[in-house]
Each structure stands twice: as structure tokens, then as C-alpha cells.
Image (cartoon, rainbow, N blue to C red; front, side, top):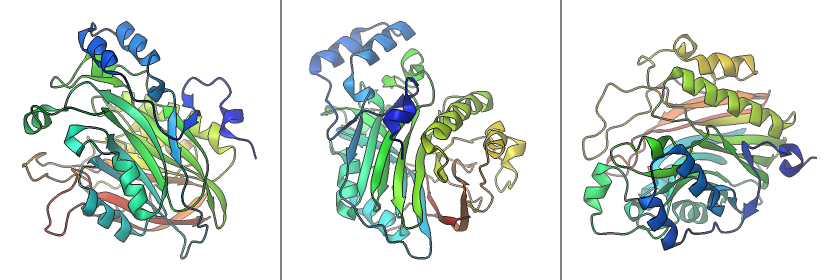
Length: 345
């Protein structure tokens, strides 16, 4: 079986260098970044000085290869993953063998300056892969800057992850764009260095190894750009899968879809691209809306289904959308968790 290092070769969209702990940027780096011009050239220069953007954090603790009634895969945009206890409860009750996790923080004031992924994985007894999508230069969006005024990020990483109670055999990060969108066009004063990406891992299951992929497409974009990101995703996954069955999911930011639509391919070209590449979504999703209003009253409807699961070489059933709320019914993310059960097709 080829390693990801062998398969990746010189593909600049793939990062396969794994570390146990990501390197933390220096205070001098943040001073330099905050004083830099908001140009693509400056963004790329700063990116090249950050080891955390060219490595992935891989921590293996799980070794259980037993699955019952198929393999349960969940995907969840946890919006910072700042509510630890209810997040543990939500993921634990989902029965997920593999969690495709997006929008998780490491060392941000808004998430209590914790390593949110490591904390969640430890509480659930799962292995994990974490990669940095953005280095936050500030406290976050306008709401977060107000809520955490006077506080400081200890690290400032925001990224995506994959958690597994089954053994992780190999891992990689897939660049889905060239980065810089949140630098040259900082939204609402939220300066960030980095770009959209996916986390892929080869997982050892009771029916053999599979490739699982946690995906996050850009939110400040349109259908054409989402299609371009999806093309990159498909090409990289084909390389890494090397013939293995694939399940991937996450936040595809399909924000133009009408509520209740069961024909997303009529609105979003990315679905036809995935179908042409052999992926199915019709049995892996229940088509419910996946956005939710937070306790502060945002965002407001109308909502769409932004989050999806896709499979190739695996059969899906029992797809369901699960409310991302705590025991009091308060939202712990602006996205619901989605899950389905998978078996060899």
C-alpha cells in the first residue's frame, strides 16, 4: 500500500508532512503581518514563513477497528468548536466512528484559548488530524471582537479536522484555493492568512481501508468558484484514494439552494462534477436545512442546506440531520450535524 508521501509527489495542493504539535507563530510575526500591505504578494510571503501552514497535526490514540451495522460518518461545521461539553455530548450521541469537522480553533480567545480539537478527541477517545485553514490576526468577526475586547489569542489558528475511533493510517491536507481571499478582501475587518482546504485520512475499517475527507469550501464566493475548488478536491482525492472507497463531507457553502430542493445539481455545478467522478449524495443526505440561528439572533432565515456527505464505492443509508444544540435547546453552532451509515457497496 502506497503512502501519501509516495502518492503526493510534487503536487503543490497536497501537504503530507505530519507533526505531533503544530509550530506556534512568534509575536514578531503577528506584528509584521499587521503592518504588511494587503496584497497577494505580501500574503504569500508571510504564508511561506509559517511552518503551521505546511504541516498537519496527527495524534493517534484509537485502535478499534470493530464497527457494527456499518460505519457511521458525521460531518459538522462547529463554528469555532467553543462549546466543549455540549459538543462532546452531540458527537458522542451521534455514534460517529469518523467525524469530518470544520471550523475548529486552536488558541483563540473566542474559544477559550484551548486546542478545541484535541480536547474533543481526548474526551471521546478518538485519534485526530488537524490542519490550519487560517491564522487569525485578530479576535474574529465584529461580534467576537466586541465580546472578547481586551483579550488576546494565545495562538490564533482556525482550521479543519478529522476525528476517528478507528486507526488513522495516513493523513494529508488538500489546498482548495490559492489563499489570500481573507487577506486582500478582509471581511468586516477580520484579517486572516491562509486559504480553504480539506483534511484527508486513510482509515482502517472492518471492511478494509477507506479514504475519509473533511471539506470546507469558501463562503465569500459563487457557484463558479465553488466548482473550481471542487475540481481541485476531486483531483487530489483521486490521487490519495488510489482506488480505495471514499466518503467525504463538510461545509460546501451551497447557499443558493432553495429550501427543500432534492435536485441540487440543477443549481450548483459542483454536484455534477462529483457525479461525473462517481460520487453519490442522494442516499447519504436527508436534504434538511443545515443552518441554525445562534443565541445572538444571527444568522436569520432563509436558510439552505450547506453541509453534505458524498460517497464513492460505499453504500449509504440512515441519513439524518441532527440539531446542534445543548441540553437547553440553545445552538452551539450555526450549522447542524449531519450523518449517515456506510458499508461496502
